[in-house]
Image (tube, rainbow, N blue to C red; front, side, top):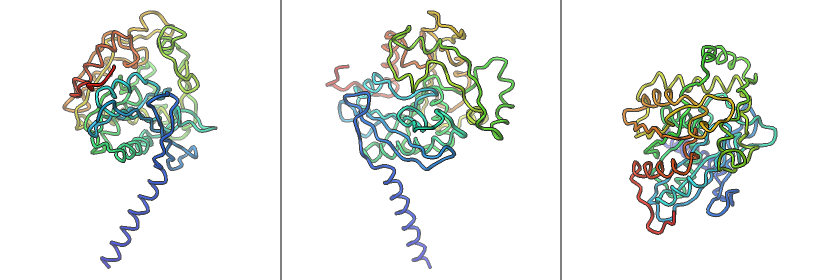
Length: 344
């Protein structure tokens, strides 16, 4: 009987490994970011929207990484395009990986509702698949990094289903609480609605202050695909609101639930205007920075808060002078000296 059980268990393990190998064919292809960047698309199990994929993007270190790498998770209405950030990690002997989550960026499939989600744990598969790719490439120590909604997702992941590969967490303006003013009192109702009518659309307004602070053809310095990162934040669904609200509430109610060191980064001030003004180029035009600090400090017992003067919502897209000060701080916190052959 014991022998039969061992055989059954072995067959299950082999079947699981085969299924994973089918999804992870380890075929890297040139990426849209050009030289030094490549990507791999991963087939995930079908969900309520049908077929879904995630995409892993990488930029290998300029000198031997010793098995150390970062995995970056983008925010809502976003995808990975921050090549300067990847180059900076690569110049400090850290392999850089990013994931375009299902229904985002490189992972958008025809006919899909972009950015939709019903439970943030859906993204755990995308993160775990990326970690499997990284492990197969020789990574054994991972710095998980998330921006905005990606910061909420990575925090939720580390609280609920952390991989032992992850040794540190970097949060870039994480979406740990709503920033809706008086409308926040009605979130519970939309949450409830999300359980029975998850596809109902919810407007996010028509402000373009944030995108105007980023785009080179407006008041910023960045180019990116506007069909993957829209100038006006699109409508979400009641199911999306429910997913965000439930993850935030879990973190609010489970103090010190993350057991790795956390670097918590946020702008020194918020910007609440719907129209662009010069002030929008020096502040977080999306979230309340006081909420970020308050809830971020509750995530673990080893949290390093960093208030970034002049920082945008995506701190890594802030003005050159801000980035010039922020990157060295990050790499000091990581204990990552620059490669001797780096031209950064």
